[in-house]
Length: 575
Image (cartoon, rainbow, N blue to C red; front, side, top):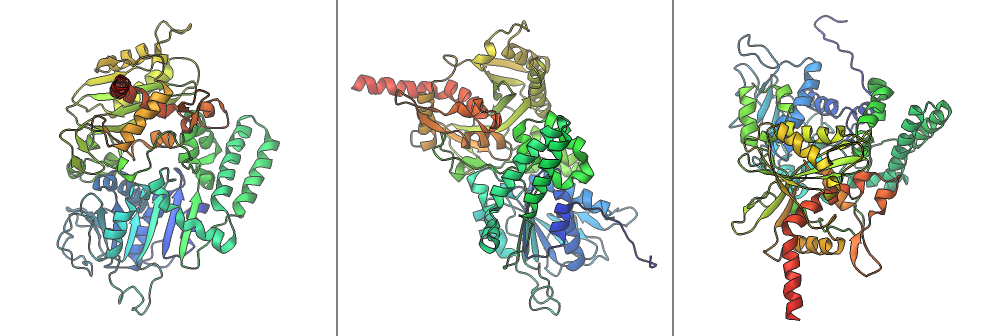
């Protein structure tokens, strides 16, 4: 090795290598958990620092808190593996400084910055500027943009506010320079698989696969995911012959969708944990398969693409029903107090959620399914987090969180586990009051236990210091036709007696998948009802079916069903 030259051996997986070795102006990496998105984000920052000294890279996120708790901890873990060191004010050594004025002697960006409050500055003058859609969305002229957790962005707002800032230093790094960089004024979007219609813009760039080479990318990809599920089953069953046969078929299919750069310099790549199997091992994949519910596993680990069905029971298409909410002031103070300790920032709890009022009770409802148990957490208020608007005379019903656990066997373990998840996340919630909406099926006594599911759940909550107020709806289940009409009135938002319904899109991912994948059908009496046949179909994931939607229904019907019934009574009397 040459003197004064530092060398580091970096081992990358196929998905990382494919992204790294294919230069492109705009890059879209739709990768599942465990595939190394943090490496890619860190590698992009590192490359920009080296290629564009004194340049500016914007890090565009939905919220400032999201940047500090989700993106930056994993990004700088990667950068520190590459040798980057945080600046030490005592020794006056280091490579980067977080949200502070750079020390004397460091280069400054070409773009004049009045404040470094939202900047991570490197010693060669490159600046990583944090842009957020809920605050400082209009930053300085930039040379490149990176967006992690891109599915949380409002794309229209991004195009209006962030994209126009990507225009700086053409004469230094761009087409007017002596050595123009291909990636200058480009974008990198990193994301897990989109799951609402508003997020599907992330998949649109993939059209070039079919347009340029006739490849139906997502059809082939989902076929690979289903084969990988069979592959795991074969491994668990120790069927080596079947495992080899399926493995070879997945490799064959994967070769038919080999990633490539489009004619207009766009790179779109899909990847799952099987791209990182050399590092994590098959045993890890099987372990995750065993401890996670199938929905989480297929989407989060295998990157399965879900899509909204036609003739949906719920009309939740409109963008304004979804929102992102982080308590940025708390997160910023927390970051300051911990000296921007990335590890502590990554450990989230309810104090970091802006839509969680610490002085008000939490409303919860469970659905005790046969294969998994589910919980919705809600907290009504008069503030519309999607529109950022106060409604003094109208209730806004916010679904703020979700929890679920897989049932390994017919015992009480998953009930306590579900309650423990809730209690741990809300351990700092000062108001120790829970409004508990009972799942009536959870009231049934079972032969192997003296207590019902609801009784066990309530006892667990009380053991953890929560006072529980119980609410019960009429009948075993809310009537399907009436419930459909209730949701129609709520979603229409024209009758002020009904609440506005909003969902935290980042916290309630699987609730939204469930509700957007619940079909409606007409029964023999001509009334509307949920098509619940998916729950009895072993090939369809229970979480993709109706369970989470049923969970939300129970609380909504218990709270607001009387408004509908009173409406019916008024109409009947008039006629």
